[in-house]
Amino acid sequence: MAALVVLAAVVVVGLLARELYSWYRLSHVPGPFWHGITGFSMARAALNGSVHEYYMELHEKYGPLVRIGPNTVMFSDGDTLRKIAGARSKYTKGEWYAVGRTTPGEDHLFSMRDEEKRKYLKSKMGPGYAGLENGGFEAGIDKNITAFVDLIDRKYISTAKEFRPMDMASKSTYFALDVISELGFGTPYGFLKEDRDLYQYVSTKDAFFPVMITMGNVPWLATLMHSWPLNLGLPKSGDSAGFGALMGFAKTFVDGRLAPDTKPGRDMIQSFINAGLTRKELTQEVYVETIAGSDTTATAIRMILLSLLSNPSAFAALRTEIDTAISKRMISSPIKDSESRFMPYLQAVIREGLRLYPPSTGIVSKEVPIGGDVIHGYRLPAGTQLGENVCSIGRSQEVFGPDAHLFRPERWIEAAMNDDEEKYRAMISTTDLVFGYGKFYCMGRNIALMELNKIFVEIRLCHCKTRKAAETLERRVLDNT
Image (cartoon, rainbow, N blue to C red; front, side, top):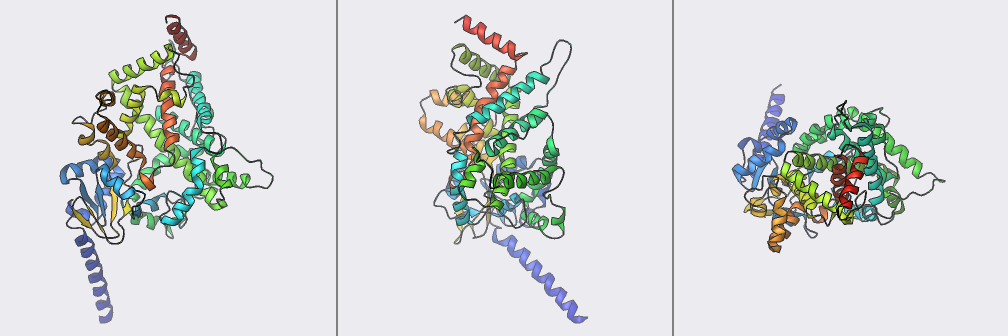
């Protein structure tokens, strides 16, 4: 009995010593005291859906580097992100990325932390994300832009007798899902055609994302979830709905594409097959592509549109630019990506929306390399998890001015007209950090931007009561030129 008491005492003392050391090693970094003991505060903010606001409040109070967990600190400036993500940086992906695993113990490109394996897999997948083997992405995006507009024309144009509201949150998600499946797998899932939540995927995702965000802030929760017996409750191929149904689709799709007599496709997956990805790797990427390639773009569409609708002057300015472009026959239908880049106010709206409301606000932590590092004057020991606050980066007053918290697209026009090239470049490069940087850059960036370059112009045309009314407007404007 005495031996058991001694053993219990040793265990308790050992645990207390470990916790004390964990607190002490980063105790010099500013932040709430309890952040050095537990990640509970971050988990609570994540579950409440306000974690991005909590991040910004912490930086306003404690400065550019703040402790947010026993072994995690977070920065709020673009220069630090460029430093740790540069091509020659020795930083690697941190514990946060474990949340992205779809199958316990198995990695895909996004969750992979082994630097050499990740670089090798990324080199194989690069041509697919660049559209080098399928003639580009524009035709596939245009096809689904047309399907999106047709859905609005068919079901959601109000009449004098009937008000037909449309939930833009769900429809933007349907659009993004059909685009990524068209580009990735050669055919859309059919969300727009059916105009419903197929496989209950969207509702499942919306319910589960707060849990994923929480695990991202408290990484050991992800490890716990992927361990027996809790892993028995994780989604699995064969489920009739949600993530499991998507896993089943991914497996069936890949099996079909790898069948001996299957005709090669002209899509991203075919590029990955040509590059030699294994069956398991292909299945993982189909699944992850769907989630990562749709939710972020849909979020950007929703937040930019919300910003426009709550800012009448900005909405009117964009509408005028689009109508003028139609009158001068500067744009096609659907608008070409190359044409959209010559519409300065449209580009200003997109950049302003992205910097204020990043499509993803995860801390995407990186691990401090052997030898440690000094960030903002604070020594960080090796193994420390260093996260980013992308919301604060995009609202930097130093880069965007004293009103950086406001949605004001005109700041981009002003910067371009003032011949202050250094400031303008700083604004562009800082906004682009929402897609990561350097060796951690988002490979789907160009696809997302192409979607954004097109969707708001087409929504403007849908603002007319019918497609026919939009064409009548175009003819009337052209006749007056």
